[in-house]
Amino acid sequence: EAQVTQNPRYLITVTGKKLTVTCSQNMNHEYMSWYRQDPGLGLRQIYYSMNVEVTDKGDVPEGYKVSRKEKRNFPLILESPSPNQTSLYFCASSSRLAEITDTQYFGPGTRLTVL
Amino acid sequence: GIQVEQSPPDLILQEGANSTLRCNFSDSVNNLQWFHQNPWGQLINLFYIPSGTKQNGRLSATTVATERYSLLYISSSQTTDSGVYFCAVEAWGYQKVTFGIGTKLQVIP
Image 1 (cartoon, rainbow over the protein chains, first blue to last red):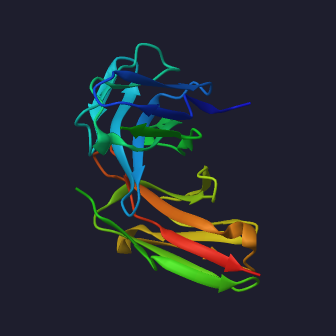
Image 2 (cartoon, each protein chain N blue to C red; image 1 turned 135 degrees about the vertical axis):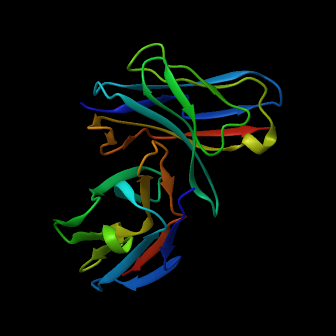
């Protein structure tokens, strides 16, 4: 089954404790992306990756890191989480056709609370 | 960056009614997608529609790229249509994706 998976689905942590949210897709997609969703703000892009070893900042990258060492995986790293990073996080993937992003498929979301 | 505005922000419908949701964007786009976020938070693809018209059952969408807007039509609404509808665009020359803040739809029996 074609899918995007994220782990963990729920996480409660404390300020400053490093964490990683994993994302994996089995569709051989080139493009992967992380979003955060906050009430009244819709989804905002954190980082995206056009392919292996190619990443770039989205609109709200501060406080986050990513890496793309393999095509299927795109982990999101919070080196020193703060309460303002409490949010619902989504990973997405899509293929790229002639330099244009195709349909995005989303993971189930990770609800993160930073105390 | 590109601005994406969705209207109306909230909508309450009686089951069986029809509705039109609108997405305006401020610049030329490579692609445009409509999503439905159900009450459990899951994001579901509805349409990938950078231009033209598509239909899928009771839902259809039209994007007029030259006038920078897209419309999502829901006919004979059902309670399962409740949730938030988002449009998302990728501006020409960029790989970033920008979402509107959504239209929250509630369909009541």
